[in-house]
Image 1 (cartoon, rainbow, N blue to C red):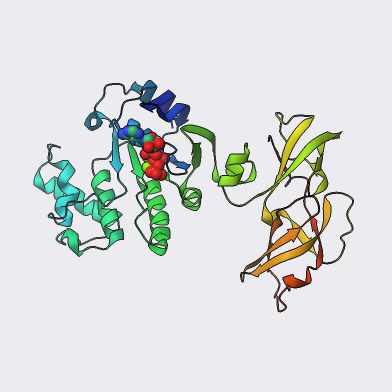
Image 2: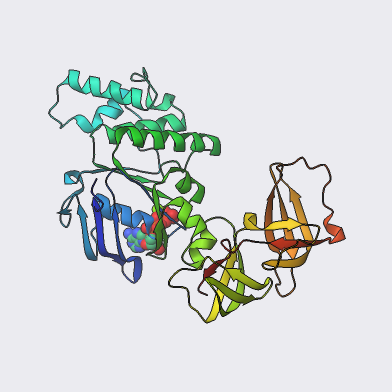
Length: 365
Ligand SMILES: Nc1ncnc2c1ncn2[C@@H]1O[C@H](COP(=O)(O)OP(=O)(O)OP(=O)(O)O)[C@@H](O)[C@H]1O
Ligand SMILES: [Mg+2]
């Protein structure tokens, strides 16, 4: 498998004064499920359209399978694109929609029929060939659009929010189906979404984008557990930030004086973590332990009072006031044991929060 199957080298796209894509460099591996994740307007579609050949980079180069793509028109690239809206022809039946891209393939009718049937099997709609496009549900139409893109056996499939128009339940089902289908056919998927759960469910790796730049490229696990910058930590899931300043080292641990957690011991720095100066300590809600009795620990413990509590069945959320921090600390606890008493937030009960040295992330301010 080529690691640089798609190579994006110093690529920018300017629209007048807007830098839609701003000097981006990274590779996508052959057979990878790769997602572009970021808020609206961060440049995801623009990057995808440059891979497809609908836009030319203002600066930089794109290579697919080692071939430079400058000047190569969309239909001569080994890629196919699936758009957000259901891009199927309303006046054609399912069979004709899927076969549409094969007209110029040089295959005879019997061969095309066989391929269309194969595609219908793959998208789990066997026997649907004669259905009219208007006789399909939204999810079925989206699967037909996928089949039409896949039948040409592109080496790369570009998908721009293909599940955006579906309701939550269907969307979650399609996410799993799409992932299984990608495994089956083994082609490289570049998938655009602004939904972090969707990206995490499906992807081998995710590029988190902001304002035309790539902030971090990593597996879903690493993005969540070891974010490199505050913006990524904040964008993926929920997290608490505490301002602090580094006091020094104790063995491998970094000691930080914080606003809110007192003194924090952290082993979650890396080689680039500074040894002095201002820093942000970041801790996910579920990494806190919460107890009503004072725990018997030396480090990484703070006293607080409950401001708000929400029982959610499988877990409970607590919002805990700690001295030195205005906003309450968000804490999530699994209700693995049966809970029969609800916490009364009006009592502002005293609690203690604890956390591991490995869970206190150190991020530059
Ligand atoms: N043809 C164009 N002319 C001028 N500006 C454009 C053009 N296409 C995109 N832009 C601008 O470039 C930026 C990136 O747009 P893009 O469509 O790539 O964002 P996106 O990440 O796909 O957002 P969304 O999640 O809303 O689809 C935006 O500020 C947008 O207004
Ligand atoms: Mg877009």
